[in-house]
Amino acid sequence: MRLFIDGDAFPNLLKPILFRAIERLRLESIVVANKKINIGKSKNITYKIVELGADEADNHIVETVQENDLVITADIPLADRVIDKNAHAIDHRGELYSKDNIKQYLAMRNLMQEIRDTGEITKGPAPFGKKDAYEFANQLNSFLAKH
Image (cartoon, rainbow, N blue to C red; front, side, top):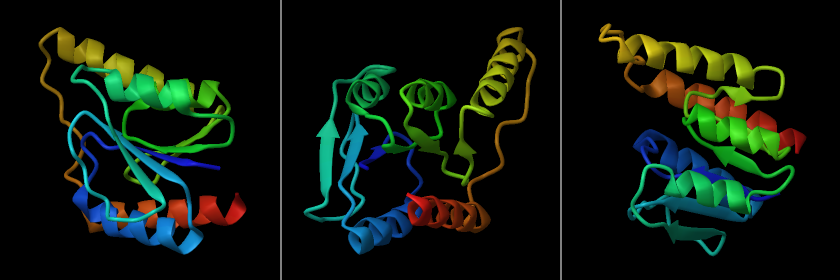
């Protein structure tokens, strides 16, 4: 299993959590972004900078990911594409996406986008905090223990 990190908008609070897991398990990890992102220096981490563009990092991850790999992303459409390839996805707040729940998350995301497109002002997600980092760490450790 390889670990892919969607580096665009990756929360700083998660970097040390993720780095410790990568080092502890010697997990081959690829950070993909359209700008320089630093999780930490390790022989287990490869940094891949893609061209600027809305979905360039996502497209690279989908082209490269294989069955049973893990992708860390807050991008629900990317998570859906990853799940379609029989890989796994966890978001920054610790949600494990699966074949059982990804379409529901995608439908909700699309509905909210349609509402925003009509000019309706909606609340965005709550600010990312320590509780979210804790939930992420728990989900990541649980997933890695099983796989």
